[in-house]
Picture (cartoon, protein in one colour):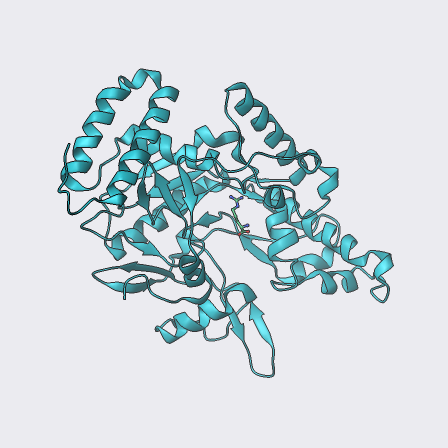
Length: 384
Ligand code: ARG
């Protein structure tokens, strides 16, 4: 096909190439889907006519699953084929996006037997801007600066919380350590809009320790389902900026990082003191000992509440099985050592003791600095 000489569209060339590469992959891995050549020719015409193309439902499902398979940071990829894909590409208004996100949370929770799931909302096209979700995850806890230099809640979201309060969010009368932030959905037509999460969408686990009776008295909790909501799903050159997805938690994400990190809930010193450890001398390894008990509490509590969770030893072994399977299928498995190795007892897990392949092309979850900033600071808006 010929295009006007005066306006060679570099982006369309790139889109054609990305589409073709993806469709080749789709047909190679799905031989029953028919002729790659016919589909590629049809998509080429569609792009020439409209500047974009529409994935078939099967292509969307495959693309989303492969984006997970390609996610270098994820240790839990053994089950990538089981990802449930909610095709919501006809949903684009803020209220509808929010409502479907809340349905996603309920469906993914599934009474505690968490289902890996993605909801794919309207794509970016040459004529319509896709909706954006500002929050890093559908469920995140507010962080507040209190008078006298005190702080409460999740420090990671202090700035985000301040910004949402400026935009009209009313926090609870007495702010708590685990106040769920509203969801922010921005569309070109409506600007950013705030939606309070219904309690039916927010499942949480109260933390207790299997042997330390005082632990429950700390009043700690965490949400059951981690739904990452500010990554863009890219399949064959098409971007889906609103495509929240979840798996289930690995205990260390909560016990070693969210509750343990010094710039998050920073609970290790308090737990060490409650345990009666000697915190005056680093060489007693009081930090390590307290961190282990915090992680035991997380695993124990999710388990006894019947909410899916995995430990880092089991998950490391599963990841090596995944690597083997990928190799046997003739594929490389991209992985980032710094993300794959668990933050607790790294060298006790097999994933520590090896190197990994670098990222490949193909379906992926991506983010950009502005989106990252928006998820942490509630600005700048995507459409100005
Ligand atoms: N580390 C993030 C958190 O604690 C969640 C990232 C995704 N984790 C997962 N198991 N799918 O909130």
